[in-house]
Length: 309
Image (cartoon, rainbow, N blue to C red; front, side):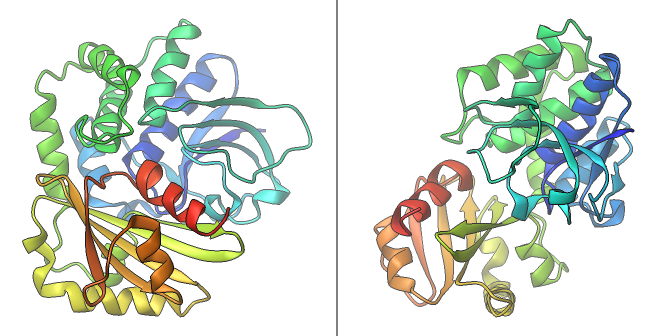
């Protein structure tokens, strides 16, 4: 049976690039593997679309149901971020850079989860360990994913391994100007004009179980907060609508990449808990958190601690 390599819901560039890369690696090692994603190609986020186009790659096919399939998970290990009916699938591998989630298996599987800034950093190491050459186009996508996830090395999640992987992948991909590549991605990622607020909220969004309370966290990386000044009310309405669908809290990180901080929009049953989690004070529906760049390392851990996870 073909192994379907799948990233998390609302796939970002790391999720898509990691699926493509692990499918290539698995195939080279003798398995029949193909990359898939939890989105239709026409709904892929703007940054990932730019990256795939730049390196001449085709977006993975959509997966809507995992039941009865062999699945390798990349860039996540949470049931809530996996394709539907993942409990009825045979999960054969997990490659990730987040905390371990709640996926369980009946048999031993390959797991490679490391505290680095990007899943593609882990995969770069796996290609090396298995003496498999990375195709030039795949190397380009992996490089872009690392730059994106580490915010061009500005994120606190960035490690020496991420920087070393970028150095490796620059050579293989033929990309010399990584700063230019990052800026092209940022322009695409931060483009908001004409995009529905609900789509912006879900451009980079994940749900988490916080001790029985469903908490959603979205993130928009921006060159300046002025980009969303005229649509804040629309974003807030989208958050309220999303919260009404059975969530305790919905947060939207408006991350200013230049100022290196986040204006945190909050819709919650217990706003005081969110204030306490980050040591802030709401001014209306938001507050500024200096230095907050990473959902994985700065936002989610603080929430878990506050909610007693």
